[in-house]
Length: 171
Image 1 (tube, rainbow, N blue to C red):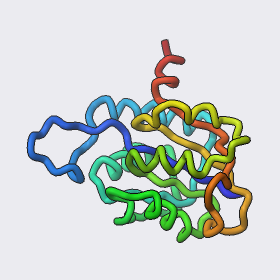
Image 2: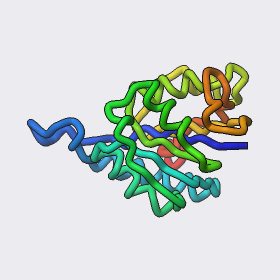
Image 3: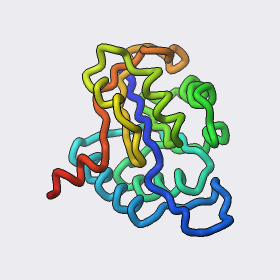
């Protein structure tokens, strides 16, 4: 069984007028989101072999603040993930060889990808009815032999993590 994680970057800053979109960093809320997500990842003993990220500063910062918990064997910056179309995200998946992979990308494509991949029978399918928030993490299982076989409704969405839900558990 292969595992795919789709992570939307954490909350980014709009505080610097004139800064190009690709250069926007995370804001304080985004950094807090990643602390909570890192704790969830560690508590659930999750593992990932390879992480592919867009070249945007906020995705790179998302990885750097989450990397200690992730401990991926390899990482790559994938130019096609920014701004990224559904076809670009699928092509990135199709080109992978690791058993478990994570894409760190952007909306609306993370949302669109999750909806395309999730089989209607998925345990967490109801979670996709709402918005795919910043630092949202979709966890898919894929029974195929090769990532090149990934397509519409081919994966089981086994979990969908929202940082707001993690925050609510702390109260």
